[in-house]
Structure formats: structure tokens, C-alpha cells
Image 1 (spheres, one colour):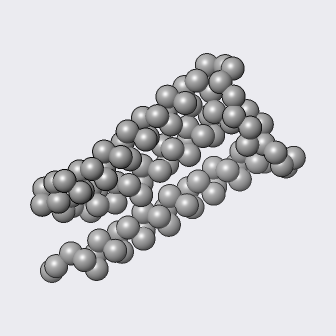
Image 2 (cartoon, rainbow, N blue to C red):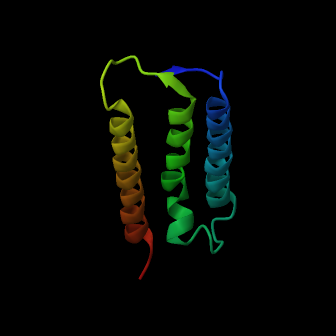
Length: 103
């Protein structure tokens, strides 16, 4: 995917991407430094680095101008892969959380 910042949608995509970076690193920092907090010990807190990736990919999708591959329906393919990746990533985080959380 070729990236560009020529139009307002692409600039908004960069903003979304940067917000995602802030959220992603914040979720890790909370887990590392506030390990015993309610957030870090909850499924939502533990899985945050997994599910905030959807924001990352939406930002990339908006920044992208054209695709290197000439393929009709690439937007729907990108969206489908995005949803599958985030679902699998979050499901994996949930499974790990369930295994490490004492009953």
C-alpha cells in the first residue's frame, strides 16, 4: 500500500494511527507498572494491546492511497483481514488471560 498525506482523509488516518500508538503503549505501560491494578487484572486491561490494533489498521487503511496489487475488492479484503486478525489476536489474549487467572 502506498502512503500519502495529500487529502484530509489521509491526514485523519495519520491522526488515528498516532492515537492508536498512544493507546497501545499506554496499555502496555499500565500492565507493566500497575500490575496489581483492577485494569491490569481485568480481561479488558489484559487484552487491550490486542484489540486496540484495530485502530492501527484503520489508520493505515485511511492513509493508504493505492495498493501495489491490482485487485478489485481490495478494500473489502483489507477490511475482512483486519477483522479476522483482530478477532484472533484478541481471542488469543483472552485464552491466555483465562489460563493465567486463578479461579
